[in-house]
Image 1: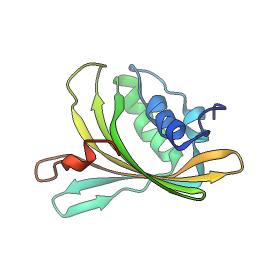
Image 2 (image 1 turned 90 degrees about the vertical axis):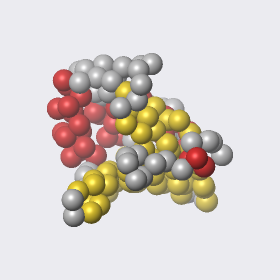
Image 3 (image 1 turned 180 degrees about the vertical axis):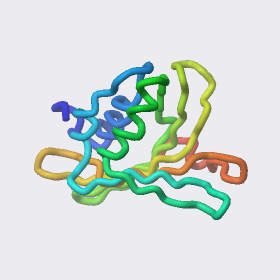
Image 4 (image 1 turned 60 degrees about the vertical axis):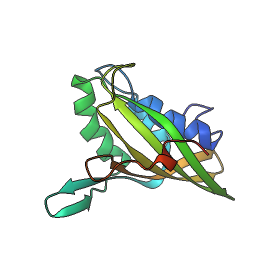
Length: 148
């Protein structure tokens, strides 16, 4: 983790978006892994014909799955807005995102990343990212398209 990555709720969330975004090619998976607390999970909710299914991954699982895609395809994810709640050493960030193949292009996906963060002796870390994508029948509500 870079010195500033865990300095605040803002810097840790920005670091996640920064490290997964970029042109086709390798990502800095060492930095990526450093952003997460021990036992952290990444959980996309997949839509299937049988209904929604959460797919639980460790940061290592995500690096392997996404890494092969990122090697071949550019991917840029950016935050559109966020809502933050904090108490003591915990924080929840509802972060609305857009995904693109190139900066400035029309997004091919949007959704919400629900970050659960924990502050330890070294700073803020990601405990969980749970996310769902916007799709037909599941539009992002206006309240999540505007910041706090």
